Length: 417
Image (cartoon, rainbow, N blue to C red):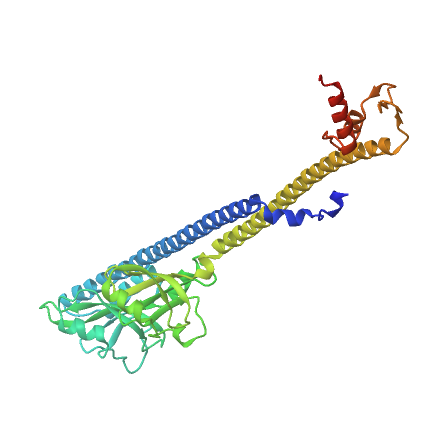
């Protein structure tokens, strides 16, 4: 049979030949690319948002610290003014009365709990009055920069030191000082307050910051005054001047405040930084946020988005495969139906041909005289008609030589003389 020679095709071999296969793959690629672009755009915008929020967070923390510390320094300045005025009042009345001046100092010290020392010197820089004055040989502070500035500048007002170590306590501190004048305006000494840097540690510890975030204070010479949390590296220790060049440049170009990204010189870690100058005082407060902290929610979003995108791709590929398999099955079914119909028609034609061949091969009743053939319906037909109807043979009529001579003789015999 002719259909037995047709090669059998599987659904898989039919799919690549179908243009629908390439259209589907193109559509899946375009959709996947579009979804990937949307996911990337979402994650990029989300990251920028978290970075922006980190900058706002550091700005807010720096502002809160600046207001708090500036307020503490202002309160100390008010106390120093009161002590300086009391010393000048006594000098105007004939001389310092140690008991009364010490009582005034003690009163102010009770209100300024952040101080560990509140004292007054004479014109030579000798500590004479105040809290915790050591007995014996007087402690001299005339070598301190703030003392020299107040001694030679009557209009200096409040003078603040950088980070220094106390001569009595040996603690790291910041000293705030005001000039004491005699009635004629000449220099009579200074009233100064020792502000312990431990105050900043207590203040910073109350703030809720990330595990990798940090807040700190530096003086105008970039010496580290306070840091929380403090690391083991040398650059994290009080007095360290290890600062990135970018931070130095930013303070030089933006003396009040700025927000920027930099890699910390002390630990080589990237952070978002905001610094603010503490009011009229020569100190800068820093608030920093590390990407490991402020990008943690974004990383979770990225992981979820990546998982959803992966699931989308897997589902899309599975659906595309299902569509292709369904398409291939439908094509195979259509091809099978077509082949079956072709086979049926061919079998029908072959059956009819075989049927006709069998009738011609059987016994055929033919008239001995006229040569007509008897059909199955018991009718008589010309031999040519019967054969034409029951086979593929066709007839053309002529005359054999003998019949031709006989007909010619008969014609001549019947022709008039």
